[in-house]
Figure 1: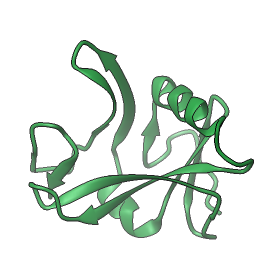
Figure 2 (figure 1 turned 120 degrees about the vertical axis):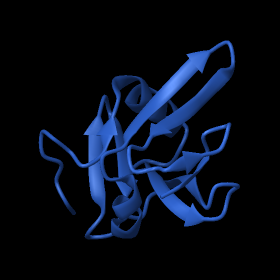
Figure 3 (figure 1 turned 180 degrees about the vertical axis):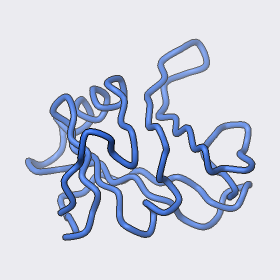
Figure 4 (figure 1 turned 120 degrees about the horizontal axis):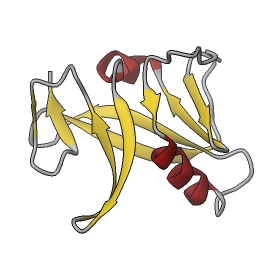
Length: 114
């Protein structure tokens, strides 16, 4: 598995890590959150979030605040330079990915184009 250097290709904020850790408390031991990219969505690609206990040898592994987030190598090409955050405001609670490579995104922020 790819170890994360001080400057990881994907940033996981403290708020996002704490929320992931909270979610994983109710999952089987060794569970991680896999963040990925799939084709589809109103802007071309959509972000995916899945709890898993399966890790691939070449996954990017982000560990922070007791949480582990995995990104597969194909998704990493679309997520490189992204910031994964967790927002809790009047509009609701959600993970938010800020993607500098995105040329367009939908209003809800769950899909994007490159």
